[in-house]
View 1 (cartoon, rainbow, N blue to C red):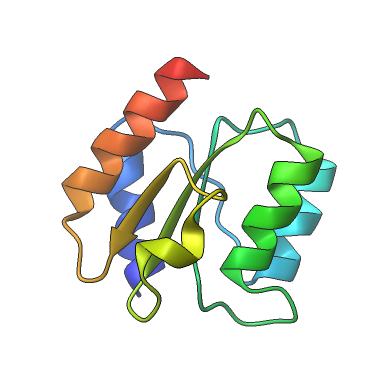
View 2 (cartoon, one colour):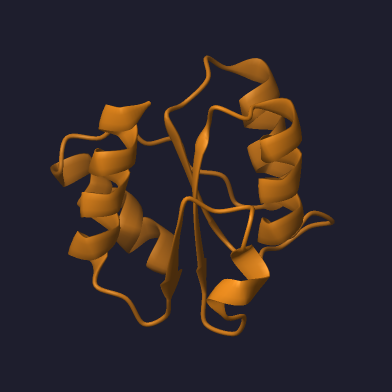
Length: 107
């Protein structure tokens, strides 16, 4: 539900959004599509690949891709070196939108 709310906020803010229901699905999307400007992920995700592992793989394979990590459990320290931005839950959707827009403009 949070993913859907954030995706809708990003779309309303003018962003093109591709959603993935798991880290595994996100990796498949990244392999099969044009490279996005920003990846937004949560630490806890369904599947074999959590958000931190997803971010680590992205950093190795697509180092220019900007990464935003969110979490309701892990602190910002867990994302150090992996994220360009980190948001603890609960977060204001508009703050994430602003960060996505800023990072996309820098990409």
